[in-house]
Image (cartoon, rainbow, N blue to C red; front, side, top):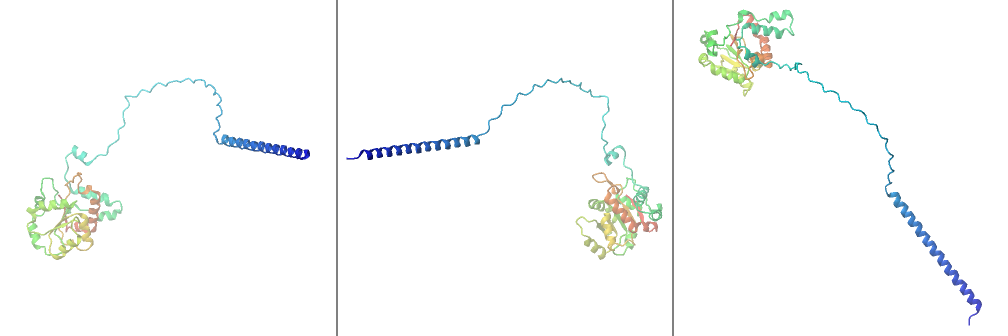
Length: 289
């Protein structure tokens, strides 16, 4: 048999344990609620903020528009045209080509050399009238012109025995033109030795060998290669009697020999080297073909 005191004690203990369990349960519930609140708050912070409602804009008063009257084009105003640079072909179309005359070469030499020369130096570089042969009036072929200016060519050819020198020199603007001139002088040259004096496809060493090896009577070429041979003391001018310029012929661009800047520069340098002094000494004659 249990005593009443023990029974009461056990009853109180059971009540205390139950109340303690209830308190713990309530505490667990409160912790869960706080966690849920924190989670909800974090989610709300991560979400984009809701845009604030925009304030109503003030109604702008409409502005009055005025259309300007369109400017009428002045039909009577003349249109300015750009001036086109005249070409040689345009000038030739309006007038017939004129043959070159000695005054053309004399004026060219003076105009070009007067830039860097004094008056005294220019007097020494002036080409005298007596050194010029009759110019081609555009009625001659090369053979007929050479026969006119050099009627004693056969005798000069036979008497010429000096190597590294020429009796006649013809200056033209290109290698192709030189070949054309050589073909066209067949009736004049006879059995004389003709040398091609240009740089295209011919090395200068080959021309040096030909000048040193045998006697050459006539040379046809460009001023640049002729000048180079003279500078190397391979071509001697002591035996030179005739210097002919291919003056009137025009290339595809309708340019004459002295119309090409680089050719004109080389011709003037070639004349200055010794040719002008030979002309002034009356041992060299000039012709314009």
